[in-house]
Amino acid sequence: MLSITDLLDFIDLDRETVQVVNRATQLPDEEAAAIAAELLRTHRGIYLLHEMFKDQIAEAAAARQIVQERSLRKAYAYFSRKYPIPHML
Figure (cartoon, rainbow, N blue to C red):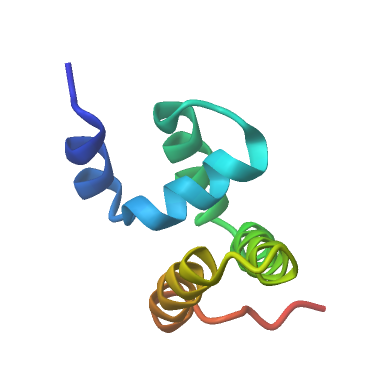
């Protein structure tokens, strides 16, 4: 059986992105990882992941969760470099 770390390495996902999907969907890490991997397959899915990050950053800022907001911003900066916002029509 694969661990979540093995799975993330295999599909080239970072734990922070899986956690964003986990918080957005309330699914376990394994299912959130599978959904994140599926979302990375399309421009629309990548766009949706960007929106998940932005929403959670905004929620952390509104709740004055400074540490959480900083952590999300750092993870989002990494994600954005790796997967820029796609140009969609």
